Every structure is written in structure tokens, then in C-alpha cells.
Length: 167
Image 1 (tube, one colour):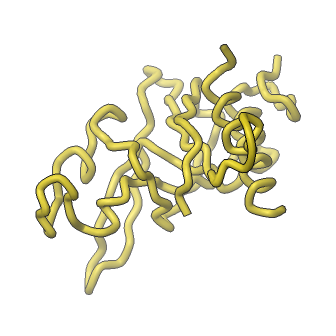
Image 2 (tube, rainbow, N blue to C red):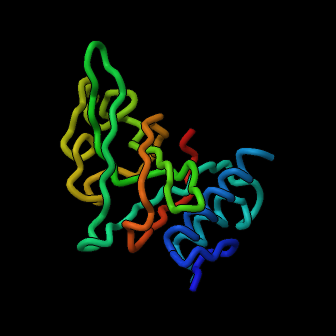
């Protein structure tokens, strides 16, 4: 049984993520579950244009049903700066259940400073290497430009965070 509105792939996670991609593309181009509420907020169904462009998601692996942490890197100088995130923006989902996910980070990771302490070399343990989604700030999430490809058939659960303006 499908839990998405427009798809029936036989996988709830795949169907919801396809719905999110469709909703995000609609915005960029021209009690319900947390995902349905976030999609409605993204589309402005809750009153006027929303200004949002992303439904951030957390995925849970089938094996042990633990939150999935994706890793990626951006070049920095002569090396690379590897970071992990539990928060993703769904970029695309194909018919075989493969998805491209963009890692999302709190705004301060991109600026390299900590708003609270003023430390310009902020590399706090929570945002740089979170151990759980609760350790990672979801305020002012920003697109990182770091994308990974995943097999959605490996996941058993998706949690949607409130719609956000990440780009």
C-alpha cells in the first residue's frame, strides 16, 4: 500500500520522497503526518506563498532502524573537509528507488563562525560531527552542494522536518 499521493511503488519511503521532489520542483518552477504538513507548508497551502524551497528529511535504515548519516566533502585548500549530516534535501528519485540527496547543514557551518560565541573558527562537535539528529542544529539549514546517491529500498522510515528556505 502506498503512502504517497501520486505514486504507488510499493514503498512508503520512495512514494513520500517522490511527492517531496514534485512539491519542491513546483515551488522552484513556477493532525496530518509531518511530511504532509511540510509539503503543504512548502506549497503555501497554509496561507499565501511560503518562501520555502525544501522539505528537510531524516531517513532511517532498515537494519536496526537507526537514523542514516550521510557523509560528503567540499574541497578546502589542498585537501577536503569531510562532514556528516542527518538532514537531507531530496534532489531526485528514479523509478528504481535510487535518490540523490543533498546534505543540509546549519547556516553557521557555511560561514565558519558560531553566532553565540563569536568564535570565527567554530568547529563544535554537534554541527561538525553529530552523533544523532538531536545533536545537529536544524535552525537555518542551508544547501551544501554536497550530494550523495542512495538506494531508498534500504530505508524503513522517513521523518520530515518543517519546510525551510535553504537555497
